[in-house]
Length: 416
Image (cartoon, rainbow, N blue to C red; front, top):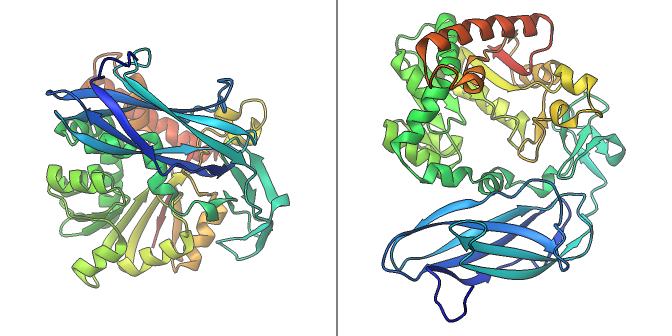
């Protein structure tokens, strides 16, 4: 950067850096940016960490450029969250924060000195399912960013260090830029997501309708995002509402879809009293919560007697993880990352549900049409109806085969 020339966007200051961070914890700093021009500027922010001789902290890919827009003369503060892997060396490092239109063209950059120190001692945990003590010798997987432990009493698998990351759901969204995606707040986000997921969401609502009927039925989606499943259910005749922790997603669901979405179960009950539902759906959400036992009990309290609970989670005993744990870790452990707190099997998920008061539990085969339509998109043009019908039929048959063979990568459970 030429010191005699004021850049279009400059870094005013970096504050609140963590001078020392434990391996496995999250490094946090705040960068304040100023638009020095009289017109709006679009730019990227890069965060990376390297040793003083510019060697990267790790090859683990947890950095992505974050896109920002600043109005003329605007000054904004942006939080940087960096997940420090367990494989990081205990040393002194430089945290670099850079801004510019491209990585090669940087308008400004700052460096902060930090130290990586050994992780805090954590000798044991209590299993959330059975309450047994789980010690470090029960760790079954050590990844650059996560240690998985398996309870020897009940078989529950979980992130051994989750007690240090109770706010992880929020922070993980910041690391991956998920919140910023929602904050763009354009109708195209909803339209694009709906188009890609129409098959899988529509198929799920059809199955729920066959189980319960839809006329006047009340449906709650826990972890509803921007409300795609709720919108599909509403079109099918359900009365709907949702719960979502991401504030930007809640705002988008309310404004973009006119859906009743709440930031928590507590807020839902505060607004609606002791409201009960015919159906509660939790798609790929309970693996993120810090206390599944409490969450399943909350679901029981939200359902009318005989109401239906639909749970969809990754299947920890998926065959690639069982037969390829060492030779192909990216395949066998592809769904294992710091955003997932718990990893379920049929047995552990069933035990959770029975303990929460759901005696009638049935495992269903998964619908993979939505995922497969993403992979094949573009072969005959985005959203091509003919292609989608073929994909849907093929993937449904394939999903049934996986389920019958006990090879399904996803557990879908219907419980009453």
